[in-house]
Length: 266
Image (cartoon, rainbow, N blue to C red):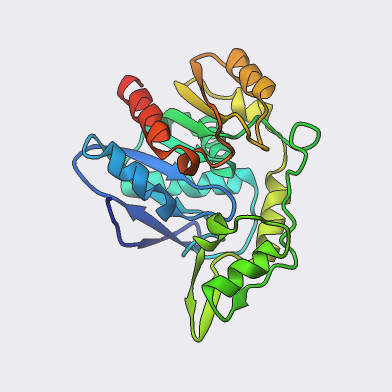
């Protein structure tokens, strides 16, 4: 599996971290979802190499990037645009999962000259009830620290999350214990700020787009996925049976194959 060490840039008054997996291939930008971090894209980087060079951003308030709002979709998209311009890698395909998918297609709508193609993993054009029953995960009382990684996971499970693995990927040793890299209060603010009806952003670009949908997703219904595809030209839909919201974990090989195939055509 490809590995990369974090790099840092001061962009738009904020210190942001990113991973550049390197290689001679054409660059691709990857954007994680809420509570995530750039390193989740290491398996995809390995699968796409050497044809593509994956660059993954720790979005503001996530991973090793500096926190602090505002957390609007436009602000997140402006961070991504600043990274593309600073590295001189645009226009390029942008891959995004969940909230990262929202930021990706917002970026394409606002800065079309920077985005060659889109891969949107399990994110709709509407992120609010009734389309999404639980658009905001209540993490307001989550612990920030615990004595061990296991204890942190147990505390998250006790708050109604059966499998805390995704969240624990954003936990690191700190002093004599472990801490979450994201601040629960900021994540509440960010989730609320990015909830809403985003059809104008989804329909605001025309670049080739791949929409990936998990059969058992709680974020994107089959009907909404098909509506998104039918209403936006140059958009194709790939559905993953027996998968949920985290397609890249539920079917890593199928996910990587779908992304690689699309990029080779787009």
